[in-house]
Length: 119
Image (cartoon, rainbow, N blue to C red; front, top):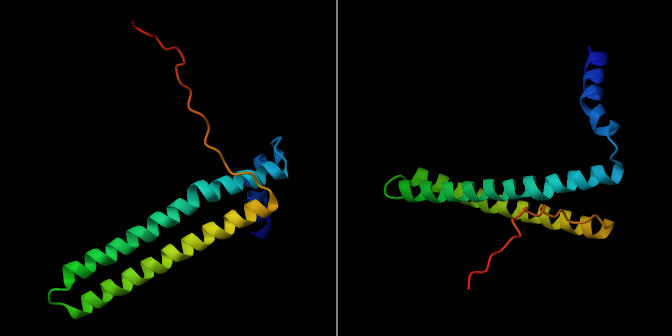
């Protein structure tokens, strides 16, 4: 069973290594995925969690002390999540700058260059 799982893992990652991309290209791709997808997703989830706590606190603070305390805890963990996401973003940016990994640039959007002037 272990041999089958090893073969499946190798077959899944083989196209990645069989391409003409070198190790540097793979590092750039991984860096792009982290900085363009995972970090904004972490920020969004932490911010959503914080505002969920705010809504829960406002909704239950009128009469339910236990619900209000739970809302406060959710807000605190949302702030902690934002701090962690910001810290990870800073660490990754620092590592990229120290290793000389270029920042991922968004591709240019093709536009129609023809402009007409009407006088």
